[in-house]
Image (tube, rainbow, N blue to C red; front, side):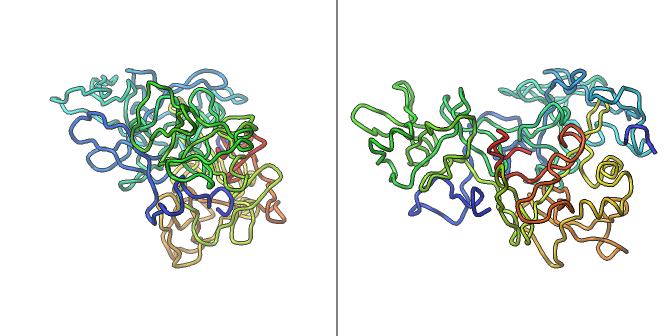
Length: 451
C-alpha cells in the first residue's frame, strides 16, 4: 500500500431571449475575432464556450501558476515546466502530507507531457497577436497564448471535447488546475463571463454582480415601472460606448441609456448580496443572463432542492456526486478519471476496499442502450474492482453514467431526495480528494454552482 493513500429550476431557465424569438438551436457565446497562426481555430464547446483548438480539433489548455497550501505550482508566463520526468513522490505542497511520500502506481505513472502533450511550433512559425513562441527546457519551441504555454489533453478524443480541465473556479485545495484557453468574449468592458454549473453566466466585471432580464420587457424596450425600479437596477451604458455583437443600447427613459443583451434590457438586483447570485431567478418573471447554457442532464435525471440550494439527482431524486482528485506531485496530475490511479478514491470511499466503496458510493447505472445527446454527458463500462474502464460484457462490468468523462455516484447515507450527507466527503472538504454533491446552486455557500 503506498504511503500517501491514507434541471426544472435553474437548469430549465430559458436563455435570455423573448419567447417569440426562441429557437430550437441553443444560443452560443459570441467572441472577439483575433488573428491566429495557421492551423488553429475556435470551436464553441458545449460547456466552456469558445475555445481554441489545433489542426486536429483538440482543445488547447494552459496551466497558470497558483498558490497552494505550502507553495506554488503551475507555470509562469514564458516558462513552461511540464516535462518528461515521471515523478514518483509527492511534493508536500498540500498539507498535511510531508514531501517525499511515494505515489500510487509509480510503475505506470505517466509524465506530465504524456498527459499534457505540448503544442509545438514548427521551425518557420511566426508569432501573431497574443500568440507567441516560447522555448521549452529541452530546446523545442512551443506555442503560447497571452504568455502561457499551450498543451492538449490525452482525455480529449474529438472536436468539442473539453475533458482535460475546466474554467469553473476551484480553490487552492484543488491543486494547480489546467483550464481551456479561448478568445475573449464579445462583451462590453463593464461586463464579465463566469463559468458555473449551469452555463456561462454574465456578470458586472468590477463587482461580480449577476445581471437579469424580465419577461415583462419586450425586445428593445424596458417596461420596468417605479415599483420595479426599487428592486431592479438598470445597467446603464456610458455615453462613450457603442453597440457590439449581441449587445445593443436602448433609451429606457428620456436621456437614460441602458444595455440590452440579445435585445432584452438587463438589470442588477438590489437585494443581491454576493457575486454571481442566482437568487433573482427565483422571482417570477426574472432570469439570470447567460451567453450560453450548459447542456441539460440526460432524460431521467432530476433537479432537487436541499437546505442550501439545488442539486442534480438520479431518477429517484437521490443526489448525484462527482469525485475530485489531484495528486500532490510537482506536475499536479489529476486522479479523478478512470484512467488514473484509483487508490486515492478507494481510500476515501472504502478504506481501500473496492467492495465497500461500491456499497458506500455506488455508481449511477445507465440503462442499456441509453445514449446522451451531448459531449459533456456520456456512458462508460467500469470494472468496480479496479475502478477502471473495461469492455462491454466483461465479467462484473457496470454500465454507468459519466459527466465530463468521469463516472458519477450516489451515496448510501442519503435516505431521501435532497439529502446531501456525503457532500465534501474527503480531504480538504472534498475539494482535492473526495466527493462533492453535483451542485446546480449553492445559495448559502457563496459558490453559485461551482464544483
